[in-house]
Image 1 (cartoon, helix red, strand yellow):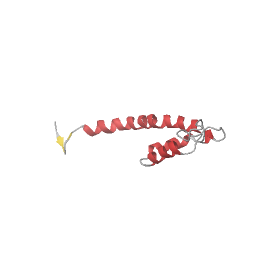
Image 2 (tube, rainbow, N blue to C red):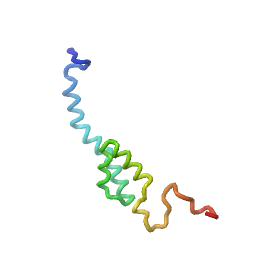
Image 3 (cartoon, rainbow, N blue to C red):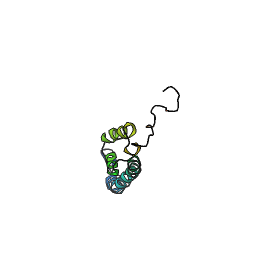
Image 4 (tube, rainbow, N blue to C red):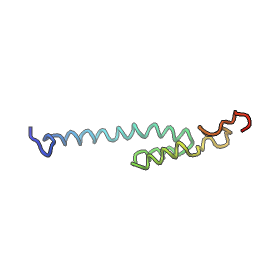
Length: 90
């Protein structure tokens, strides 16, 4: 087998073939759950596409986790992890 800078000759066609098919599959696996989450919490489901952008996806996760959810507005429910309203004296 021929070696070229540490790679076997013939490595790259298989690599590009995998990523040509694998990238859309992995993107779908990442976006679909966030599409459902955004819909359930009251945000636009199109925001789930932010999960595909490096570093922006981390910011998006923090905003989604700690931000206000429009679906809970006016329901009287405290946000998850908020003050416990069942404790007397609070």
